[in-house]
Image (cartoon, rainbow, N blue to C red; front, side, top):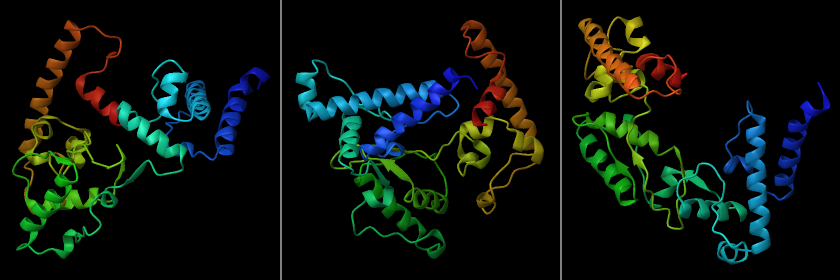
Length: 266
């Protein structure tokens, strides 16, 4: 390997060593791109320059005066100016920039696992959990008519997920929609318009709409469901092709709606 080819690797190591020397955990605020080292190095340099500028000025307010411009911390994920600044200063002070959802709820919050809750309690426990999340600043936007036990199981699992801190009061602001974009693995699929109209490889392999095991006690898919999915998918593809024709863009390439969606999932 030529010496110039090694330069990006050496620069990357130098940047990482400098952050380590400063006692700053890059994992907390950086999105790494190992397949594009030049991009990663630009991100590391931008963040390091910002850190040095912040250390020189001493505070956000001083940066506005001394630097002569209002800059935002180049951290990931970028959410909003206020949130980015809060998380950046938390990071600089060695404080956490994200926590598990359960840690952001009132200290006395306690919820049982779904298996511990009987059918006579599941509705009230779901309401209690949803109310606690709402009062903490988290919105729940699920499809209508989903059984309470499925809703509770989803929300209970979310309690263990990690969320970015958005400010001193950790007031939430996140929306819990339950949608990952992957219909075959979604508990909402039977009640979701997109889930009922998009045909996936898993559906074709199953010979019917693919549903996760957790749904078996509530719904089942008939063999005719595959034909219905394929028909609605064909209509979706036709609309997508029409849109591409009317709105030329190199980003679309030659992929159809179905291929484009599944490629993005891989």
